[in-house]
Image 1 (cartoon, rainbow, N blue to C red):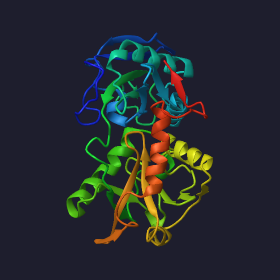
Image 2: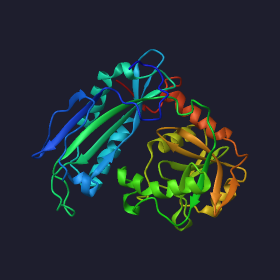
Image 3: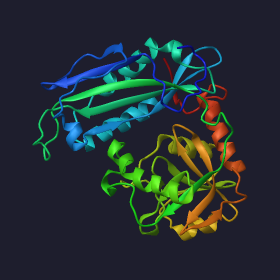
Image 4: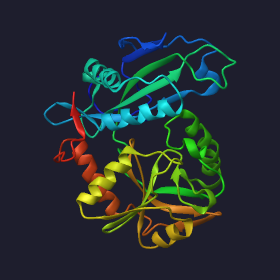
Length: 335
């Protein structure tokens, strides 16, 4: 695989090596780099029956001088450890997690594409204890896997404003597990999202249980105006996005006033009459919202196009990731 941008669907092309470690008899094995391929687990494995699994997703970038840098790896791996604790999974220590990622990157260094493409990293942790009667027991065995996927520019075909359904009844996931990056939360959001796509032609669903704006199935939600950002304050009901944190940090640097608090659908609709809305996440960084759908009616966000403030903030963050702007926060780790 050559170090060139990838045009395949995001995450569908994988590098030829992976990192693997096992937790058995109270300790972790050394991490092994092996050819990409199937893993053998017991059909009674805890993850298959009781969903004991968490993961992360972040990127490594090749800079103009050919060096490779990972963006905010420490923050992502700390969140993975938090998810492991919440799911009572054996927790790899920070050093082993970081070494698994950086060793894999070194092995597949030739697969890190040039900007604006990147290498997407996917650490995965799951329970392997073989016991179908362990519904109320944590898994005392586990597997850690790190995958790598060269991915092209998310907006290679041109950025387009998103169309989002406002969902005021269903919840994305169990409220106390929203902060955990686990596959079950994404599975829970899939049904409402697919139904909304079929019924209204939307791209995503914005979950607003009880009328309080929360997040979509796979991204955080921000309202933006010149010099001002409003987003929900952090709690256990939704994922504490690393991209969200990065965008807010850069916005503060640029002089924006940041409001983090609970707000409702009515306030959001007032805001978007002349303001902007955006989704933040690792894949697309910051995506502008052009249309909201509520009870079958379409509501235009601002002009209906991706707004200049959204573009400004996205460009500022991408410039740091790609090494075209100073990394004043120390977010990049050279590997």
